[in-house]
Length: 412
Image 1 (cartoon, rainbow, N blue to C red):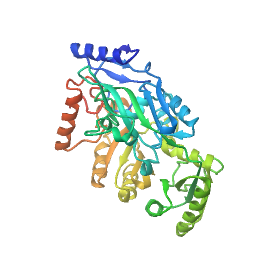
Image 2: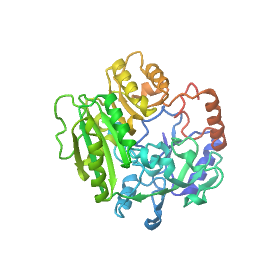
Image 3: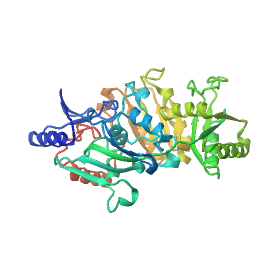
Image 4: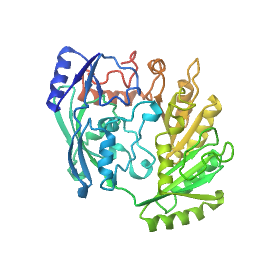
């Protein structure tokens, strides 16, 4: 396999133009931490973006940062953390789930668009992407968006890059919003609720005036959320329902007490503070109960987005059909499902259940052979598929970038 290392954005242009002339598709990587997501790609040439790793501008008072796409996410997160700031959409770290080194890049973070528990309050990755520099499939550099929201007029093309999995253009630099890190956080914990009752509790919390920033449910099973200062096991097969509040200490304390009182009808409410709360939500964000090194590490993992009101019934149906395990996030609107592999496949059953619930599913972790023969990303209705193809054609008409990643090879 040819590894094409670049030094700057001009090198990216040169590589893309050469690939265009030679009809050579390119796999785009930063550090390759998410290469196991999507269909195996139809190329033997890799464009390595890891040398584009500089923070080109950071203005903490303006709450914006501009960084090259190959910059390690951990380094950038550490930098903004030193100024008591954060990426409010709580980007997921896929390392434990996929069994890779924790070396994801900013470009990979935007390309994947995987947002964490605070998504229900702060929005997703694309909502925090203000601007981008990129190279199209024509070999030309272009700039979209700006450094403030008011600069964005007409078509906000940079939003298309978020969640595109590198199939539209090669990002070289991005500008992102950052937000102040909360002074304090509290998580209210309810034990032993079934999925339907937990959904009602999360709905009540999210509909309250107490500004909830996350709501999740881990059903009673062998799975456990590791919470600092809390017995992670508890009684056998006990479920955990978690609801988070964030802000200044006085406000969080008052809101937590009021919300705990309003949730009293669902059972005793425990409170986890600060470090313990953060540890619990990292476990939910990164789906640590399904980690590759754990007991369920060989099982395929589906990421399912559905109407929150349908979440409990859908999760129960999936576990009843397969004997698998689920975790609910986003108040029931995001389901992580680890389902035991079946010789005759499970995708058709999963997609039928999800479609009936009004949702869509992505196979985020699976063996290469399974990914090669399964629709990893949600199949699209004919009209939407045509629209998406027109968008891709306008960016990359020859299909140079990550060819076959989002569409199975036989269909590409």
